[in-house]
Image (cartoon, rainbow over all chains, first blue to last red; front, side, top):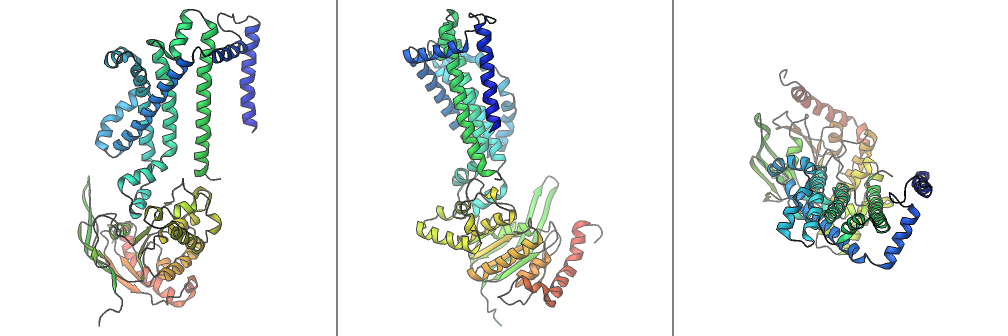
Length: 249
Length: 267
């Protein structure tokens, strides 16, 4: 309990320090407005509803990228686990995957998918999917062979074994994969909106930046920060619930 | 004279050869063995003699390289036959399920009514002394209790042949003796045929009607010893003078084989 309190205190103190530095003009208002002003600005932006369409667009695209990455990543990971030769072939690609600057391919995605939402979803998906595949493989590797034997003794077929035994056993690893996939999908979609898009939160932040409109830019950055923190904290909570059952009480 | 006990499981000329980078390894056999209906049969042998491979073949978890295995008169194919239950040495509990869900895991995937599932669950919980732990998760249980959960999960499927692969291998001596008593109680209550694979001679001598002694790799049956214990027995027979005689006989057969397994060049 004390740890949670100290964590909260650390955040509050950091924000308070920032507030003092901004109010005392140590940090100029053009560089960073006071946190309280950013928060008020966010409330205003939300109340006004100017950016509702952009928020919905970004969250929809992130959601699509996550859903695709988690579904395809899990299926691909499970399939690769059963195809050791293909896995050996692809594993070097997975280990170096995040060294590839995906954004460099953004013009290609626009040529292939057009100017709609598809390029942004594709980048989010491509960033997220490999973490899901790697986590699925790690999870399935961790399943003790005796559980596979038990499934056969209990007359489970291959699909039922994957669904009812191996995937549930690998759930903590899959959960880590989902967490990473969510983070990468946010980075991918919002990053793509920054570079070349005419909608979404990333685009609105860049537009505000280009026009030196701190009253919009910082509240929107805060909004993204809040969404990321809320999503991550909810996932942490569910991960703790999941793990608490498996670890000695 | 005809055998008064029907044959439940029969192995004929069963062998197992593994292919490795170093060439083929003869792991087992040839083995000829018959298990009688309702008997408690134990197999002992030196490390690496193929005891667990023998069990895998009987459960259809691994195919024999040659020979045939029949269960209730039918040849065993590539899938585990209906009526066969296996308890392994390793912890085979599903960690994401509580005790009750672990025990009924197999039942819930069969066309069995909920009331019957509940009845079998309560019976198994009672028989294995797990009544107070139905909602506990495996991580909250001791090694012995987790093994009881695995035995209960096997029992609720009402197997006619129970194969036990060193089920008490990871437990301390006192717990093993008590679990042995429970096993005897279950064997009497279910009337199933039991095959116990073990490296512990005293465990085999105490529990089984007959004990097969296997040679070092490739494992063959050297001798089958009848213990002659009454069906209604428990761990107190370890103080019976005959128990010492049986254990000594098992050891005299196994000593040379165990030495051979340890130092193949000296035997």
